[in-house]
Image 1 (spheres, rainbow, N blue to C red):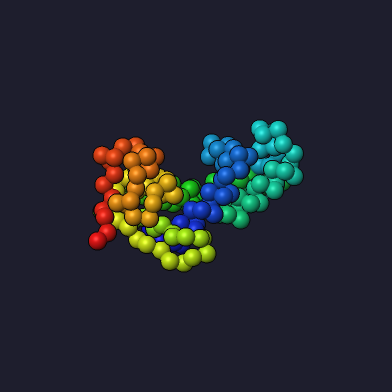
Image 2 (cartoon, helix red, strand yellow):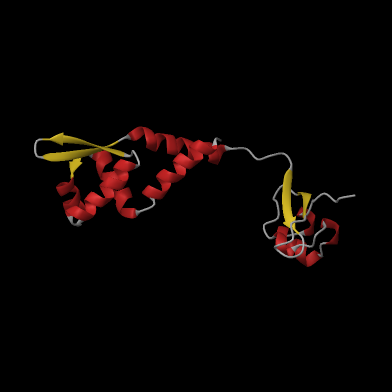
Length: 157
């Protein structure tokens, strides 16, 4: 997945992370509405709704159309579809064959790292393990994997 698509999706998710803006999008998906109508539906002031609309417009999620004295807003569906498609691709992505776990030795400032081939579940709590899989105690393995049987980390030689 391209980093550009990820950045675009992330930007939209930030805008839609606000409950009010998400409600506005939901209302506008049902019908084109003006600021006054949105303010009545949401029980907010017109200036508050206008501020949310401004952010949604700048993000390319809505577009205003002048109708007489009022501007009616409608959802630009393509950016929403692109973000949804991006999420679907992420959800359907298959895992890699080799699982690599990077664990840092010593202090956080120490830049030396070891790359270990880890089990397919990859350690959920690598800080509970020692630096080499063969040095893991039974208790550490249980904390990380649930049972020793499931601890199939490759040993370095």
